[in-house]
Image 1 (cartoon, helix red, strand yellow):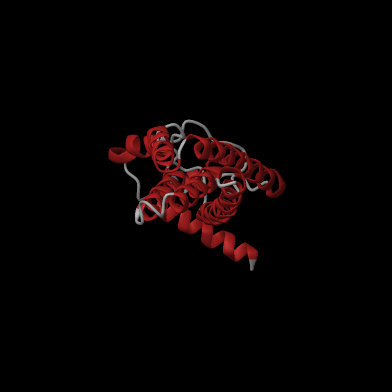
Image 2: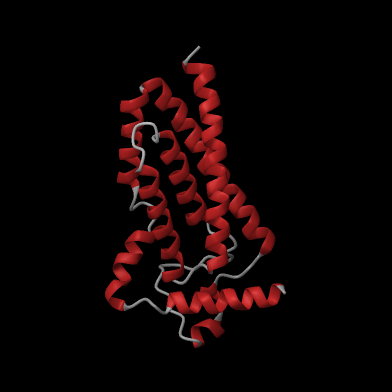
Length: 190
């Protein structure tokens, strides 16, 4: 059963990966770069500052730092525990026409750190700012999906890596949002 699932995952990866073309490669390389969205994060922090104030912002920055550290470390534990090679490491996928355009190919890919981190940030930021910007969460979720797909496009993650990363990121984002709410009530309102 697991072998069949992994085979379907590989076939779906090849289908999605081969949709790419040299015309769009540079755009997807920009999207997949972890620093591309620094301005988005800066805008979100600015909005948090404007709506919640400096003291709350400081607490949230600490919570966000803990959240990103948590998602990164758990992602690494899974990668080192499962040791599933990234698609870009497999010569048979290259022979099947896989497109690999990323700058580098890490060793293991299950599950995607880009997907978990972007989804955690989307859920956390969307929930924190929801009282003021009701539809912002939908934009942030779309952004997270685009970042996640970029990992398939550039050839470094399978769809299951992405799906599990996004699921874990959503749970982490929600959990840290709850922690943030608790801390704000305990520290700022008291």
